Image (cartoon, rainbow, N blue to C red; front, side, top):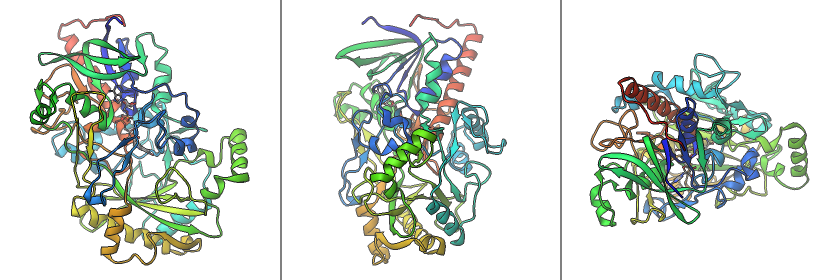
Length: 546
Ligand SMILES: Cc1cc2nc3c(=O)[nH]c(=O)nc-3n(C[C@H](O)[C@H](O)[C@H](O)COP(=O)(O)OP(=O)(O)OC[C@H]3O[C@@H](n4cnc5c(N)ncnc54)[C@H](O)[C@@H]3O)c2cc1C
């Protein structure tokens, strides 16, 4: 194939990449969007409850595994990542959680100019359409529909009541004025269907003649001319191809793949690149460092005298739910994983919550979240929302199709263990409150006999799991370990930005899809601003045919 030519090439059609493609192609710029995975044809993507079937499905999922780690009993945890249009927003749990204002103010204090909560709020609002919310905080006319649950099982109401009785005040909108407390979940769902970024941002944009979306196209190398990035090579149908760019390459491959693409292109820590046989083009020591992820532990109870998702997911009841979904677009098939949640502080003196407790009126087989238990159950996931542990993602070889080594170092910071122990205590307090205790037959995991800090710590290490919110491997900042500057430009190079979850300096207090979409919005706005500043200074941009 002859080289493609464009103003912008975007690598990765995920949560952030689809937003960038939509916004950059709005004003006629020629844009090529490369996605390694296929189109989002799989029906389970679009039925919300289908998420369980995508958790390890190789048709839409990269299915990474982290390296085994002593800190978690030598286990190697599964790292699902979307490999499909929409990226991880096409396979995730659809929770819409922006994080705490203090997260963004903290980023600004760490050297990210223009990223305070006041700075990012307009970009959250720009994307979103949430009918019930306060207009001071919530968007009303964006493409991304955010909705409350359509059907709420009584167990969830019992949880919300129990949490209040246990001392956690009700917050009516955890994405609004107050995050802290207990609240009902909000979802990126459009009626009966999942609201992936492919469906919300790309569906319309794809009709534009100046946007070309290329699927099953794996970016293999960035094309550098001295210190300027002028394009990207990609592999499709067994052939090498290139997109050459007049303006910029935007890498939106996510927290695993963005640093990997930079590294195999010779951009990263020089000593490591040399050790794996990659010619160093630009020594940037922070690429692949600063990996941060949410680690959590599940507390489960056997349910009595109430219906849990476990019963609705099998036999005649499932047939009924399928009929209900087909006829009304309601019921269990519209559920995401978590129906309500608590944000709280593990100890006094913290400025903002560092724990997220996520309630599901269902329970999963002990070996994973892909399968529901046969018996009725309910689960409270205790998550360390602002972990101190840090890890790395590093290329193993110069082969760009070789998978990188993922080393999260879960629970390597003692403070993370302490916070999770406190959170486990809060979870037990909520389960013991009468509205929920009434429906608990027994604690099934870890079990009532696991009480001492020592026994609970062993449980965290042996049974704890990741919540799939890795960030930080192309960290934004202005210090030598920062990979991108506050305008998301790769430091020391021209024509290259990273725009996705990997730029977050720290993980946000909550799930990471909404922040990734916001980064896509803000990143695209900055690219457009910088281009118009450049063109108004006299240089004519190319309008090369795609
Ligand atoms: C199972 C699961 C459940 C989750 N649940 C929630 C939830 O309920 N709520 C929430 O807020 N967050 C959730 N998350 C996290 C959230 O979805 C992610 O943080 C977010 O989607 C990350 O966005 P991103 O743009 O950084 O990357 P992604 O959305 O992963 O996009 C990266 C894209 O780049 C493509 N790509 C990568 N490398 C290349 C290459 N070399 N060439 C071409 N294309 C490439 C990938 O295929 C992918 O499409 C969940 C994650 C998982 C895995």
